[in-house]
Image 1 (cartoon, one colour):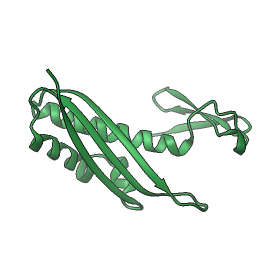
Image 2 (cartoon, rainbow, N blue to C red):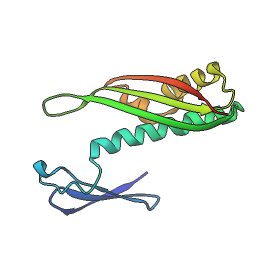
Image 3 (tube, one colour):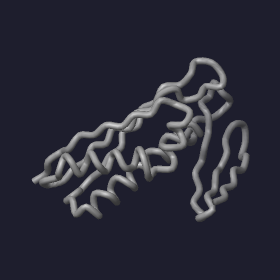
Image 4 (spheres, rainbow, N blue to C red):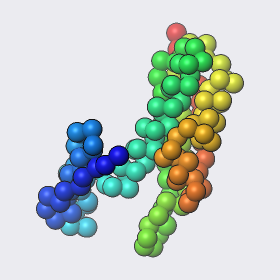
Length: 139
């Protein structure tokens, strides 16, 4: 896997993935940016949320669960001084479907946290990581 990050100006950068997708990263005005893109640390959380969601949905589908939606709400706390690393990360899944099994959803969340999601498992080596879920019944 390879990515390329190119400096545009000030604290703005464009990141391009090996698969050819691009994203703008920028900082707030107080850091010399123009607030025109996502912050790099937000990108890290988004990637983790995407990785875990991918696994949860995949596991639920393989379990033949009638999942219709999955939202990962990722919250994090950071150290107050540099390096401002994440000290806590919590991923709360809101899983929607008709007649979802709570046991199956719990299993999917557990498997992504402990076995499948490379991003969250890697981050759990250096920060406090937790996961939770709720099920929304749809008609």
